[in-house]
Length: 396
Ligand SMILES: *Cc1c(COP(=O)(O)O)cnc(C)c1O
Image (cartoon, rainbow, N blue to C red; front, side, top):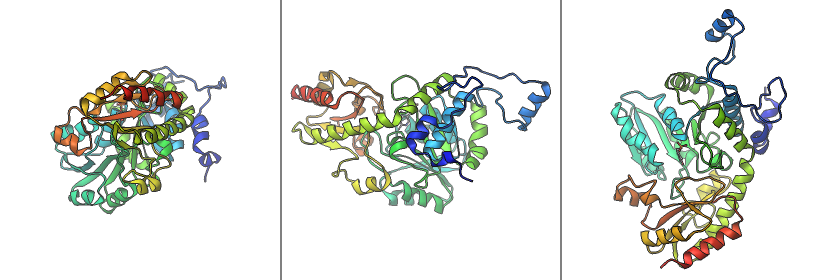
């Protein structure tokens, strides 16, 4: 039976999804800053531990404020169940490691967030999990990497920082033919611009640190999937390894979700305008923006996403010196490795977020010496363009 709530559109789910009021009827979500819970009797404690009574036991397992955040994200994502984590990396590592064992094989797109790549390339092999990194944009590369023991596919789309896109529906179909699971890191798209579960992915992960908080305050993450997979694989892993989200951060993220759609809409609009401005500028040698018709995968983007992105990738003509000079001359836009914030932020991936990659791996990922990643904030877009214009005037 479908509930009235199941028909809510995203913007309504973002404000009301998962809300559980206490006996006081508070308007805003309550913050249950507690480690544990008191039972009415020894029998009640026994029943709860037996699973006969669904109440809370301990905040490493579950907490009412964290539960509201998980339920709101489920409503938004169309997922059956979720576990919220202390950071995006806790979500990614839990989603990847909870179902794998020595002897399994994982195929992942090469263009991964640095720490995600470390888990696949360095950590997994230590525990006997074989891994293959492929060009995520090539369906054929995914297919050719399959081995008899392949259990998991992992990708990020659009990618960081070059905003390349993977065909989620095509890769999910391939995973289904061999009974493997596809895990999608959906940070760059946000839950509003891309719905991986609808496209056939089996597990979705977020760093809630980015757009979901969106105001630069706290770290968080979440893993969403079907109930069977969570019960079978994630549930025990999560309880016993303890990557739990703090109730205070869950509360902050709940408040972040309330404004997610208005923020993402404005940031995306600014990103589109800034991308168009940069594309015409003589000192800019490359602009990649998923909302522009000149994106090499524009057709796939139109099929799988509801909008472009809140980020723009650009190359300043003369390489690293020019990229640094431009970044240093910006007055509103801040230099930071973060993204998805209310404040516009610029990153030079080659010397920061992607500095651990070999020169060859960086080139392969499309990261040139002059490549910058710009995350659009909530400032007036005219001011942002004026800031970019005065900074570019100081380059070269
Ligand atoms: C930031 C980020 C992460 C890690 O999230 P944290 O909250 O910093 O741990 C993972 N994947 C992507 C794509 C990210 O941008």
